[in-house]
Length: 350
Image (cartoon, rainbow, N blue to C red; front, side):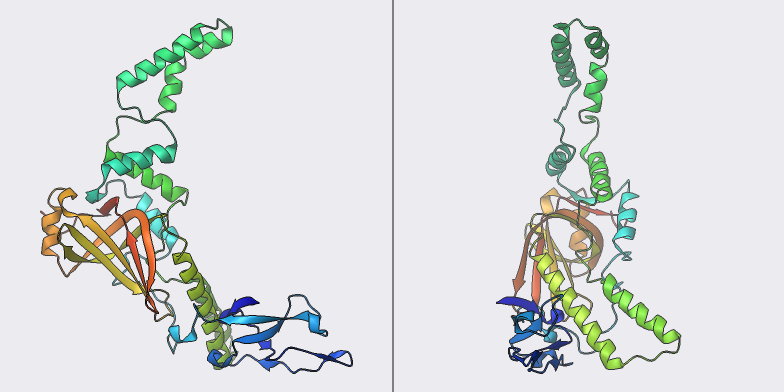
């Protein structure tokens, strides 16, 4: 039997299997209650596009309460708002993407140069050439191969062999910091990195609230109960989508921009960010990033030591190692840092 969520239940359903009597369905439908906890575990609903006059027009479904329990939502369902204490410059993913692309001189707290070089190579899918001698050797090989063919086209290509190599290989003169700037721009421009992990922002809910406000501005009255019920349905669907997404993002790369709390973990400094899973949910997520003390950029380990228990503004780039649901309403997300950096100079850093 197919499972559906509370948010997908139509406004009318049947608590018992619909039966036909004299050409019509004899069973009466039930209106969806405001308190969705009263809905039975198994119900019957009309199939999409069906006439609704025959028993075969309906299907029995099971109500899945494992993810989108109404108890997970705040009672008053407050309108979504940006948490300025936790999220930096949070407007939307487009604004965040633009802000990071413009950042051409990041202030690095931590940088894994080996991993940056590896990502740079795999992202642009080009062989790594580290020296002028390597380029000369490759040029000679191409010249020798062309020498075997004396055609006009071949002779024309011979003079372009160095140009072909230079456009088809790495810019070997870049250091890891410069490669990171190019890599980040590429990932952001091509939308190959998750940017909204740290927020429960919901465009759909905001659009609904704006629509309600616009209707009311014309002097039209809306049933508060219907508005509340519809917001709850949107919130339940948002919670379900967010939860499913957290189960599917393992090993994908993300950039989290936030005010992290700094904690001491012997060989690491732990950056912690807790936030609501969605803006209408009681569930929480916690992002954890462990930065190796010995590998931090000069001076930053001492600065983090002075900030223990306090917050620091930072951008964290790296793969999501795990996303685990702990208990009934708590998610823990662990990110392996490749780059931890700030957008501007931090006052008090030495």
